Image (cartoon, rainbow, N blue to C red; front, side, top):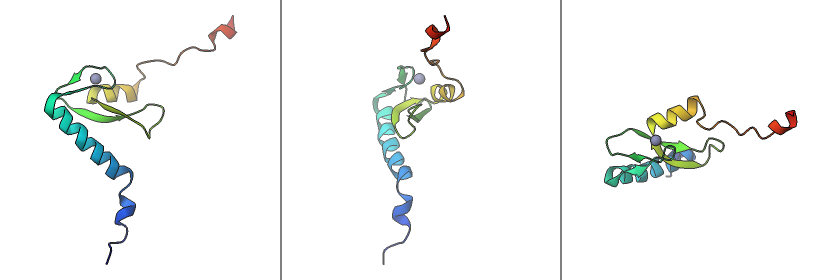
Length: 88
Ligand SMILES: [Zn+2]
């Protein structure tokens, strides 16, 4: 008898875990470049599986936990003042 409700719980969480596991192995093996600051994430550093700032369904890749938190609390790159020339 198939277990009901099991497949419904796989989805985002399951895919996220699979990807996270793969990145974790890469970080532990040789280090991975941070998606935010482009510096190496050393095996002993804390990191997060980071999402695109504008599209939360896309993964940026691994980033330092600090870089990820900094990106959440304040944007590193402010939006370009695209309409500023209309003010003159
Ligand atoms: Zn970083």
